[in-house]
Length: 194
Image 1: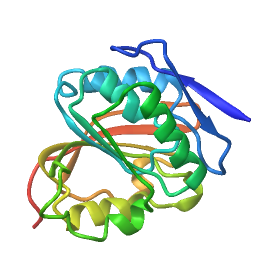
Image 2 (image 1 turned 120 degrees about the vertical axis):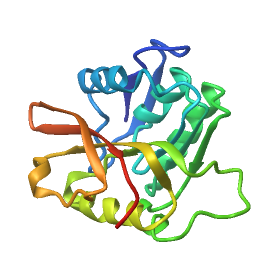
Image 3 (image 1 turned 135 degrees about the vertical axis):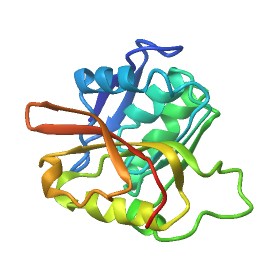
């Protein structure tokens, strides 16, 4: 049984993407996605994006729909990964690169030197399944590698407030909101590591 989520705006506005029922996979709800992309509106055009726990692909497809130049999607679940590829083919999403990878493992390796992957990224989406308790780990891994640079925007969702997470002191919270039990934040790396 497949689930569906609708792209809100841009060139694919109204198009549906499908995703399987997978433990921990919860697409960013429409209301939160709308707020997020209002926040990102000044930055999304031609942006290079990284979607670490892609799941349904809602954030990645929405980014491309609204004018991002490139999105790299990482998804370790085989069924979700295969569905992402099907959706990308249906939408002719040539600027989306999809890898069947565990984001937590992938983040511990340095960016490849010879690759079409455009690093550092301009926008990074970090929305792991809550049960993984992976946010603080992701932040530390991102900070220790060259995946991003000063001014990179990092979006994340959590089921706990920011005070319970280890946000690097080189990041600044630009926007924050809560919807139901979801806390969501847009942050930015504002200076180099100490």
